[in-house]
Length: 271
Image (cartoon, rainbow, N blue to C red; front, top):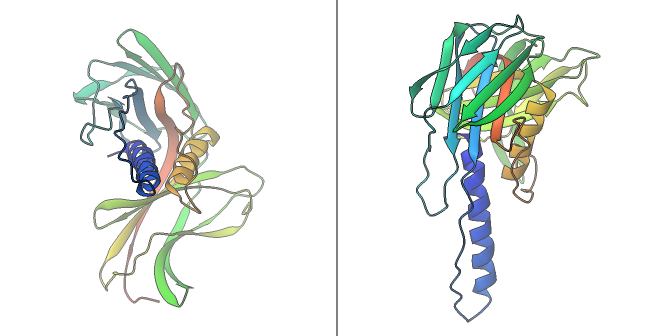
């Protein structure tokens, strides 16, 4: 399930929790009748620097009275314009999931994604940044209120004099447990050790974590940073709101051309 769907559910649960809190201080029972919002189109796609099929997923939002699901949109027409002017078509491989033939994106170049759904067109542009190498994944321990917690740290060297943005996801026991976006405003040109604050306290020798380290453009950073703020990463949650999409015509979601490097860290001995 995408992080956008998680955040939509978070907004719903926050609203319900707030209403329960208000009602708990009153004796009168209030029967709330909540209207459902119109379904919105969600487009999530990317182009990577890996030689692989590039994926786009298209869905619609759903009422909070419906079960949590991927509400895939079929029959969309999708094209990708590459830097050399070549236009590639996407093929629908399952309801709401579309892909290209295998190819490798080129860092430093622009990609344009055009989507047509039910006669309505949506477009997004993303520039794939130059690649920054992922050096290693390490483990760090921090003490909070007398309790020691273990976290993964992402180690790399930020290029000096260039504005860089990063996205890091952490997969633990087959599930993506953390997704964070960072910029180099305070780390330009430095050796960086970004800590992913997801507790790994039940690690044992032989366990491993997988980190996907992505270099992303500025608009994509704003999108994922906004998702993190909504979920409370780095502090208390802010008022839930849709993250800023780079798609035209009111579509939700994001299109990202990015470089990616993955590393697995295996627990040999805890710090």
